Length: 422
Image (cartoon, rainbow, N blue to C red; front, side, top):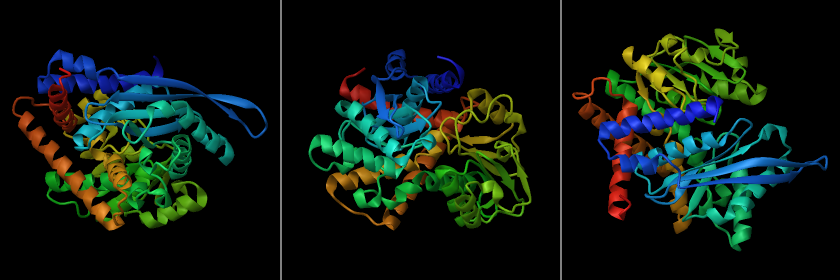
């Protein structure tokens, strides 16, 4: 292991270890949960448009099934590693448990730049991935969804390939599909919407109100865009946004609907006519704002830059954006970090709703699903906040992440005891 990948895995294992110590769980429990139940590595040959055969490397990590089928996204990205996948699958186990869902954690990945592929090549890669992993997938075994570099179209190709192999249509085998294939319209924006709900609740709990508070968001992809949109709709003043091309800043507030239009028209939010622009995509983490949200990639807040954060709250829309060293620095400054497993669980929660509907052949309205999602996110946050306050008298520097991990681990531990695993 090396580089950023082992940083992410080390971060997750450090988080787990601290949770085990705070919750006073036995060593045998840690030994089981610190290793995935199954790791599958596959070679994926694809014939490119020029006739050449390219072989891509793919993974599927199935971390824990004690609470139910594995659940987690599939990432198409040129820098993914097996260590990344293991770490992200562990996070999914914690996230699913914390959200009260009947799932274990899983994660998949293909080392590829999807933007470099034609639509036909991308479709073939998606189908080859399913064929390679078919024996370990299924609505009662492992239910993938999208992640970085994948979307509802990729899920549509994958569920079609899986259904061909099974011999009948299996909509519940994959989530975040197009609406026409049994997808729920909320799933497209569910992660960002869930982040916005949590942002509002944490502001109300810690500051008494969320109205007029300033928010800066790093990342203007699916998570950050919808986080910005729904938070803006809820009354927050969005003062900075960034994507891979840079940052736009306006202390008077950004019109998020206009920013979305600019992003669609030009391919970057930097073209938004704000008061200032920067090529530094991390600038959004350092601006004057009440709340900042790292909604892009992992390892964005580190020991090297955490001292630059001026906000009072950090809401993690991305997976693993804050290293343990950075979180310690932020805690010493009095900054509250809402952890990824709590803040960005809206996507998997909406996928759960979609899965339930697919299995039962039911259809819920967009409004009903959004209301269920908002209630789930708010309930989860308040449960973790209660745990945090219980731990504080004995542990002065305990964080919201610590409280979330202890809450999540307690459910997993109880399940293992009940099933006779421990």
